[in-house]
Length: 524
Image (cartoon, rainbow, N blue to C red; front, side, top):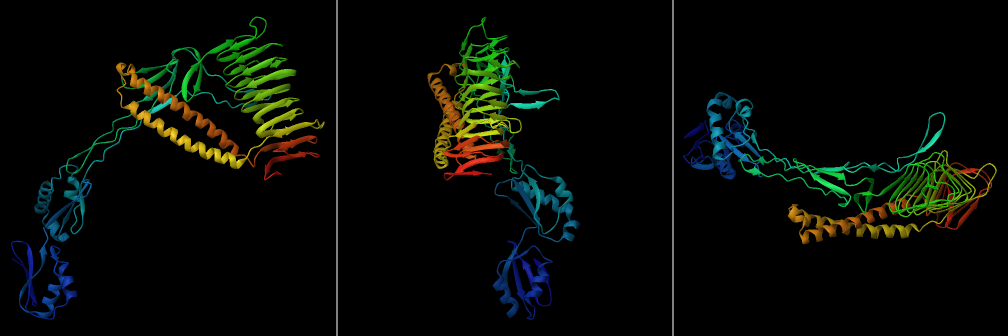
């Protein structure tokens, strides 16, 4: 079949779509030929050297120079998500023959097994020649959403000082008390997602959302499974909400509605204690967990207030008169303190002032604007922060910071993080094994499941302990130097500051941050 003819050559195509040229007159250039091909986009030149030779020599021989492209071709992307068609003709030809060419395109799509995502709007309204046109798109799968876990929001143990024009208060929500049956947390189950399809109609399966574990103590917290798959945690007993070893639990709680005194005797309780009145002179309160004394009056000449593993909060304050001893396994929060001993394994927080006290802690925090440390002796491992130290009467005040070796702390943290990572990996592996079980009543009685569950609980505890240690080490590294004393308002003469055995006795008022680097005491 003849495709075109001019004064120099004739181009034909056979039944196998092979394109031939017969050049019977020399003088036609390749530039002219390339320009001519733009009017015939279906001609594909695959034998360029033979074409060039034929035009140059004009031997009148018939030579194959290429192939005739189909009117329309179809390409399918490697991921089978996109199908395109390409019309090998001019836009004029396409517009004149749309009613004929569109059915050919649809027939070609069907022959390529393209069945899904075909856009008829594109086929009928947005076609262009000599351009890849997207006519079908697959549907991507929608992966499932991870389960959503939420827990009872415990009050932040951070004292606040507020002013209402008449009085200041040292306030904080200290103990979170719940009754049996109260909501403690929940888990919305993961979703399965939505399947997608390729343009060839193949299903694309989504990834199911990841499930998450609810960490709770089965003795004091129960799990309810609702019809929609949602899991709700509720308190089994009345008590105090707490996190122990990374798990939500309810601790025993003793509430004294009045004072600790003759009617109650000394208190020694395994759990948390809330005293709504005061502790009378000469009496003591000992608890394994948190102790909160809520009276605004404060306490005086109390023998001992001791929390073995928790915090101590005294909303009013302490007039110790040299005999009161406050001891905490964690933190102490006190509005003010007079002539008493405060000892904490972690932090001591003073709202307004501590006068003539003996204070021992990792960190002492007195309010940066109002907090005063006057007289007495402070011993801290890492830092002391206050608004004022000493007073205008130049009452001798001793502040000693033991300090630490920053390089050793860095090494300790680095080693801890390695072990922490390993512990997390072990915990995740055990969780995967647990997830393989069908959590039915029968499974709950399975010995292997119980063994794995016990192992998992131990691993969660280990991870929780690592996390607490990490926080403590990170806090040390955030300090300046190897120990720090920060005075935001004024430090008075006769104040003695010692950090890592580097000493300074203030002879004039000052303020700033004292710290030690390379056995040198600095102030910023």
